[in-house]
Length: 84
Image (tube, one colour):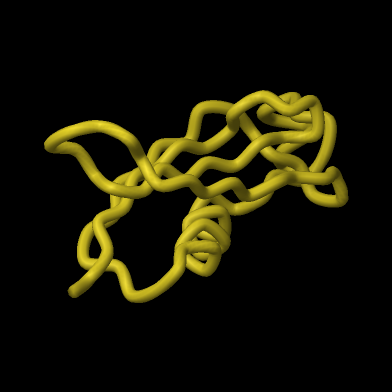
């Protein structure tokens, strides 16, 4: 496998846009704007957790979304503005 032999990953990687789809699905409705960034790799057959909370800050996106890896560390972080 390419991920193991060339990139030296221990297993197959979860496709980044799949994490985007998981985060969008966890939000409470249609999204007008969404930004995200991958910070750490996620591997196939390892647990992950998609988390959502309403942000408590002024002037920013009203929803924070992130994906935690099996160790609880943040692997993907995003923010969303819901459609009206």
